[in-house]
Structure formats: structure tokens, C-alpha cells
Length: 323
Image (tube, rainbow, N blue to C red):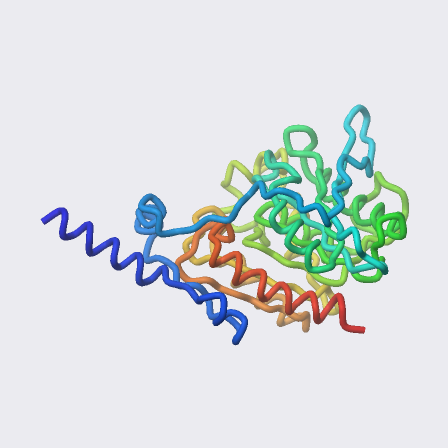
């Protein structure tokens, strides 16, 4: 009996996990990859090898130039750094994609997005990944200040790295997506006070399952949020508002591409649902991919990553390469 149930479950997982072939991807825009009824079944599928994961530490090809450990900001004894990747055969300044890592604002490293960095460098973009002060080093708004400083530094040094300073996108996952939205939606004169004056505007945002409103009941009780802000909601509710991308959305804001899984147990899908409504109500371009049956960090799955990159390619072509 148990054996029969197990076989049935595995067959079910295989069926719902089936994706598009490479030829089908080339012929038409992919539909959302089929997800799972629950995290439990998804974990079972992974345990028996039915979910392929991306390579998180790929080798850097010979034709990609890797420039690491560039200091963009000094804060006391802390050196905040970034890494740059670009094709060695670039013959003109190219759009730049800036990746901001996640990790609940307390962990993670800038190399976490090496797969994306290399994939998009291969496609002809200059890619950059940045570090920022984690919450245990300096609570909000330090990390937001840092990402604004990073964009200003990149724009100021654009020609050194063959970057088109008028074509900048920021991409973040989870906490990194939150910082990307804070960077893009907040006015130029808000945050970034501890770095040189400059321009930190960007032309496009990719939000991978990022929190958008830290004032919801779930968010204000979350340890990750409290650690990030350094206070509780009861002690300083205004800080929770000030740290929410929602608070800064207004007409003319940056076009946004969002990917969110409905099984996300860390950042509820309602955060992305609401973001899409707020942006549309403000007249801001919002493209929302709500992936049924997928959890947080869903783009570690090969088929989800392929899906995300397909629509990121189209989005970047529209907002970074089209004159």
C-alpha cells in the first residue's frame, strides 16, 4: 500500500514538474512552470531528483572579464565593494544590470547571483553585484544609503567599465529586491546622505519576491524586519512606514517586473499582489508574474530561472536597449 502511494506521488510530481523543451522556449513565450500543491510535495519531488537546480557557482568563461573587490564606499573601517563582469570583446558602452543580494538583510553575499551575472554578461550587458551594510553592522537606513551610493559611484565611473550611464537596471531577490525598490521609488533627496551628491535614478527594476510593505501585521512581527529596523513597531511605527517601498510609489516611477511564488512562506504573495495594484493605480508600468505553486527563492529551479530570464530579457530589451 505504502509503495503504491509513493509511486503515485512521484508520478504526480513528475507530471506537474514537466516543463518546456529548449526548442519550445525558442518558438514561443513560455507559460509559467507548473508548480506544486504544497511545499511538502515540492520537497519530496526535490528529494527524489525531480527538480533540477541551477549551478550557483559556475566557472567564469575565458571571454568574460571579472573585476572584483572594487571599493565604492568607505564607512569607518568597513570597505563596501562591488564586482564587475563584462565581455572582453565589448566595443561600445553597454547597459548595466546591478544585482543586490538577499538574506533577510542580515546575511548573503554579492557572489550569490553569479549565475545571473555571467548569463547577462554573456548577453552583452555589463553586470555588477554590490555589497551593503548588513543589519547587525548598521540598521536601516544604512543599507538603502549604501545601494544609492553604489548606483551613483557606478554612474560616475561608467566609462571606466564600458557602462552606458543612461541605461541602468537594478535586480534584487527578497531583501535585495526590497532595497532595489527603495532605491528606485524614493526621491533623490531621500537616503544616500552619507555619499557624494549624484544621480541614483535607474531605468528598470526586477523584483524577485521582495517585501513591499513592512507595516502589515505579519511583517511588523517578523524577527527579520525588527532586526533590520532595530526597533519594534510599537516603539517606532513611523520607521516601518519609512522602510516600506509602498510609501514612495508615485506617478513616473521606475517600470517594474515582479516574480512571486504563491507558496512563499517568507514573503507572502499578498505583498506582490498589492505592489502590482499600487503601481497600476499610480500609472507606473508593472509586469507581474504570479507563479502558482512555487516558494521563496524559486528561481533556484532551472525551469523557473529559465522562465524568469526569458521575461527579464524582453523587459531589458524594452527599457534598456530601445532608444
